[in-house]
Length: 165
Image (cartoon, rainbow, N blue to C red; front, side, top):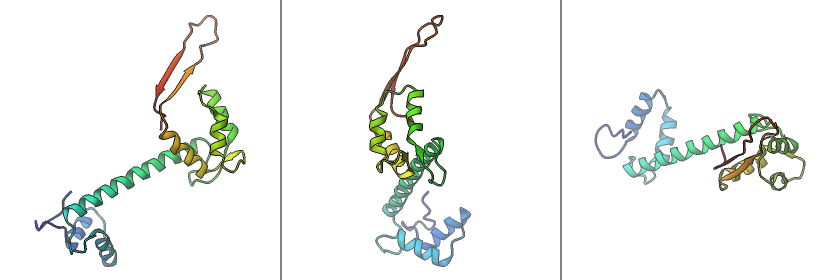
C-alpha cells in the first residue's frame, strides 16, 4: 500500500496520519512524531520508497518471528507447559512420546542436549532451543512396526519428510 496522497514521491507525516486514521488507529501527536522519526531513516522529512520497502520487510520478518513463537508456545502447551511460558515438561513425558509414536531418534541424546541443567525437567527456554533446532534439522524418517495381530495383514510404513511444525 503506497500512501503518497499528493504524489510527491514520499510519504509525509500528514499522509501517514491519514493512513493510520483510515485503518482505525488514532495516534497521539507524540506517537506520530516518534513513529515518523523512526521511519524517516535518512531524515529527509519524508518516507521515500526504499524506506517504505524497508518498513514492509521489517514488518514481514516480525510477523514470521511471531508466528514461529506461536508454534513453539503451542507445542510447549501440548507437552504440558503453560501458555505464559512457565512450567516444566517432565523428561519422561518426552520419552513416552517417542516410544508411543515409535520415533527413530536418540531420545537420551536429545534430552542430554535439551536439559542443560540436568534437572530431569525441560523449561521453556530449553524447549524453545530444542524446538527451533528440530525445525531446522534435516528430514526425519521413521518406520512403524508391523501390527502384531496374526489375523491382520502386515502393515509396515516408512514416512520421510521434514519435521512437522
